[in-house]
Length: 206
Image (cartoon, rainbow, N blue to C red; front, side, top):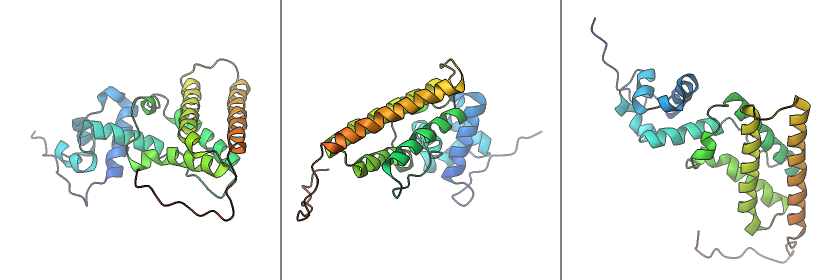
């Protein structure tokens, strides 16, 4: 029997979300090594060329997979106290790692290059800024928060932690306590803005 030709679906028949959802499903079922443009296209019933406008190439597909995983993180609520936002960030990482234990390590291996993938990073930086952390400390502290939070979540999801759940919860609580103390310490060293001060003009360097 002749195999039906695959469809080169246009923009009205395919979306980036569909491509990333199919990539995630494929990776969950068959492992990251199975992810390729052809394999994802086969899953969607299209030609590999139909994917290029949405992800570019294999590297773009993997970047999109990072985006798809990160998208499950909760959206930051700037109206909440920064301590609650910090806790939500930690809980979000932990939840994502539990749902995708085999793929979670991809977040350590690839940079966040799409706007959606950068959302949690930007949210943490905004939270630190709102807490009063000096600007020159924000990026290094955000990277430390990311690395520790993801490391704890990956260790738990991968079964590295022994002991009962209460002991694991205590590790997260200790990490939160340490970071709250660090943020408060850095915030206390930041000079309060003068009521008469006005924002400086941008220097043009970005």
